[in-house]
Image (cartoon, rainbow, N blue to C red):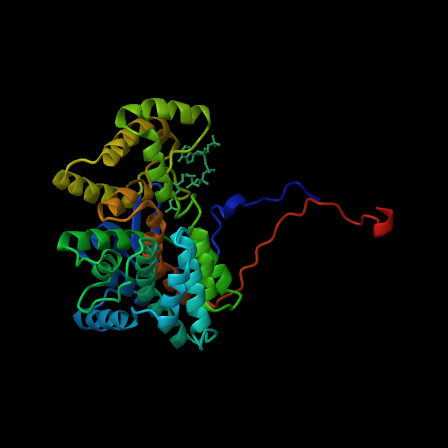
Length: 380
Ligand code: ACO
């Protein structure tokens, strides 16, 4: 066997398809969705507008947005059988496991689960985008032993998600904060979960199976689970004055600062900048939380060590603090990420299908033996 085969470990720098959904400039820390700067989308648009942009390739006009928002609203409620199932989930199960199971059940109760026509695919995408927020909110209420709430008419996607999660109609500021968080996490090219969704869909499996696979990939601490890991890290550090000793210990153990580093960004993740701005605004209004103070100190001290190696805060560095500000416990940070990323997953599946939905099937360099003499079991 030749030992000179070039192996793309972790599929790094492998370009396997075209896409017009997302442009990431990892060196300069720039991110665009369908041509628009992430900072502009976060500042001026809503989750509905960004989702429309990802699914249609252009920003909606007023009439298009109204119709699209109404369509999402009409798909938001869960079938009674799913609510019944959620009520039977063990209360202490992780909400990502609950989400994964509920999405799988949604597929099972859809009599047209296997319909992969473009029209059905678009409709199922809208339904999943609308229902993800409802499922996650329902699992939060179930874990807290509270009544599961139906969606409320007249509220936007972000506001409805907050309402169904907390039972309170959110303020304008809270809705804006949730919109920003959802917009920032809605899409990010071929990260592990999106790639997983496409790999599954390329087998001509149904969209539910693809999204279940994506939810599974998002759960890991090197991907969507990092925001939860950040909050655990903050608790471990305990106070801003402990950062220095904690970092020295981490370096000695060759550990990783959660919420820092990225396969693509070798400079500041622009999403972290936007979230820091909003987390900072909340802190200025409500008083600086210990968590925010620890992160600021960690960013300063860890930055001095790791920035020269191209390791900077990523989106998850500040997202947990924002979700905390909005009243979500730790276990819900990754599910909130999923409520956002469902738009990107569906947009990529639709785009890849329009292209050719070519089966993904990479290869490996074989390093094992060949032609071994086969011994019957009795002689081994
Ligand atoms: N803290 C300290 N060192 C780090 C960190 C970090 N957060 N991230 C990478 N490094 C170091 C590694 O130890 C390694 O050092 P070495 O070459 O001396 O062994 C080097 O940088 C390269 O690391 P890789 O894991 O090969 O780089 P990769 O591109 O795969 O890293 C990853 C990307 C997995 C995200 C990594 O930075 C990490 O584990 N970060 C912490 C978890 C995290 O925040 N994940 C969220 C990512 S964003 C998202 O999914 C939304």
